Image 1 (cartoon, helix red, strand yellow):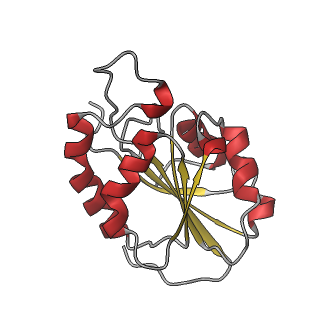
Image 2: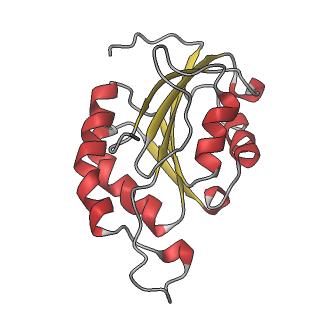
Length: 176
């Protein structure tokens, strides 16, 4: 999927963290690491991101351990110019808060990767997408390590419901 640079075209690549571990119930939610299954899926997630041929100007990552470990697992696919910001505001953020954060972006950012949590990231995609991807079904769930690519035109400050097209949705384990 080759993409030409259009200065007015913006992309949001929304990524839910890989599967986290529940092995130790005494670990705070924010500090839960990836599970073995979550670590094992990172190579497929990284390969999928490489195949998107979109490289971020900015990566917005929740401050939780599982999102930062997911970021570490895909970092090789992000390119050299990506600026990474880990933000505690993204931990537990709902779709509305995520929109507020995206609206604050500098318009020099044409592609942003957002690594976060459900239900916020799934709700964000549903909120922003005007329609499901061509030939695709609506997103009923946003499973761990899933990736949605949204595209839109105009400034970040104008982000609003149904303003984007959902170009693709991928999950390592497609729902049956």
